[in-house]
Image 1 (cartoon, one colour):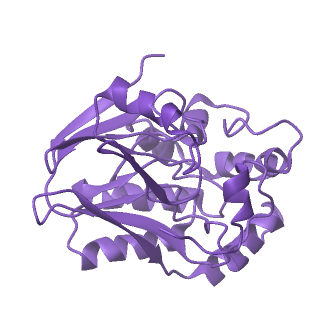
Image 2 (cartoon, rainbow, N blue to C red; image 1 turned 45 degrees about the vertical axis):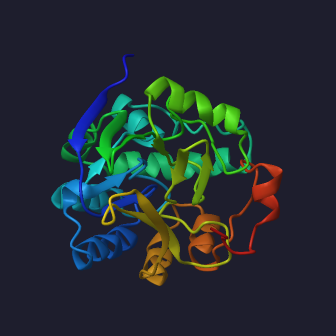
Length: 275
């Protein structure tokens, strides 16, 4: 299938970047409030995909995103939902804990989404590109070549470099892995703003996003914590249909397992995020 790439031109002013809403309506409401306080218009708010996921309100979350009119690319979850797939498309190892959990949350989400919400997800491109502070920026989910590719801070630069070369970009904004980070090399920047739907395995219920700023003529970025009503999110997830382990993570900030993580990131579990 051909990749749908949308060029949204030149953006100016602050940009709000985030990923992995994961059906967490409370987190999305809190982030929308941040955008309004920072006077960041919806056209400057960009999601790296996976608006739908582990939490209890997939339909409400997609509808709020639609009302907000923020931009997003397709995550693997959206692709699977649109195509009527049997699983989330995360490429989890068969029989792993994540694979088992996905057999609970994915069909739950699939059963809750209206035709209108699916049609809205269909409007998302695979990739967004734009110019910002004199640099070409490309937004991907996993990486440019594979929507389900897990790219971390410790992932070798050589693997990241092919994304910059192929897209002719100075900045890659990516999601999927669930952890906020940045990696700079040879005037190139790989930026993962983090996700707002689940904590970053750092021992805190807060979640993560990033803001880009061009006020001094150059591209500046900063990661931020997001406080939201995580106790309500946790309560709604305890419905007997979703994994209890994911509901617990909402409170503790600790992932149930680290099977997708490289050794470096796995060893940092519970030690906070250093950026």
